[in-house]
Length: 145
Image (cartoon, rainbow, N blue to C red):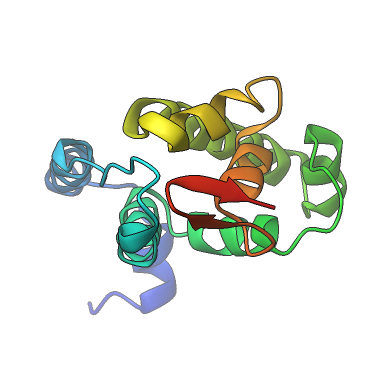
């Protein structure tokens, strides 16, 4: 008997599938994110690579980061909860934002790290918006708002 797509999609994962997923997760974590030191000459290249890296970590990141860049107000967890379609999605976005903040803290140095530290009390998406959003740009190693 041939299995339909719907039956396959709802079938419990096999041990082989679980192993494949686990290996993909391990390999994903081995990639190192690009670092940034605030050098304006390398900003666009870093931002492109950073967005790609974050997209590998979770396909939702590029969309969330794009929305954060274009936000006109300070982003907070309550904004993520309001924008999400469900409680589960909201919790996922909040966790992604927290992860983004950690990655920014660990991959920036010099003036870029200073910009990240200036908003250390904010959620990760707001830190990203402040330090790397479209309303701000880097010149001569300094963040210009």
